[in-house]
Image (cartoon, rainbow, N blue to C red; front, side, top):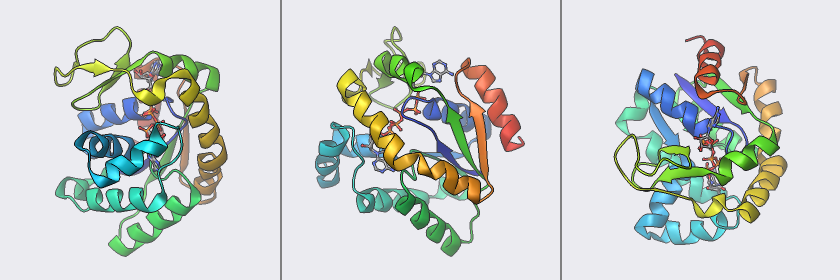
Length: 208
Ligand code: AP5
């Protein structure tokens, strides 16, 4: 299984990826998680990335592309991967196509989790994320059910930054829906339903 997850911030990409990883054991490659780890570790890349992330803007392509290439070269990604949050614009999608071609790997699907923006704003405002493993859950969950870590509110889940992220998504990421439709691999699921129902549609859409 080699798939790309598409959808607005807060659509539930990470949530559905968690389900697929638990059931199929594929590698979950989330550029948001990779970048947040770099920020937490205080690396040069992390310091640079934080300026963009806290403003709700995209981190420059080359920084993200290098991170993804390094992650995809790791052994667990050889048996399948879910790319979550990458690609985020047409330049990243074209780079990904070229890299996968060079590796002799084919994308099976681009899975769009479709959710109206008004629902997204509510979800993100009440989202809590595990500081340790990146697991996400609604507010009220104080201890991570996955690893026991502390749950916190991401800086970019504050209302003013959420709007910037949605604007960035509309301008830069939404065109990828047509990009993958033209490639004949777009699968769309209605993400505005309970997690288990969305997951059932995800599996059906992916032919699992
Ligand atoms: P990133 O971490 O990728 O954030 P995002 O795309 O904005 O997506 P989220 O993680 O916020 O949402 P999600 O769709 O995974 O939703 P979730 O499952 O958590 O990126 C952060 C930043 O990093 C970017 O702004 C950018 O600066 C930078 N970046 C990352 N990738 C980049 C790239 N390729 N290029 C350049 N810059 C990049 O769910 C949200 C909430 O809803 C949770 O609380 C969850 O419990 C709940 N929920 C999920 N599903 C449901 C459901 N069906 N019903 C009810 N609640 C649900």
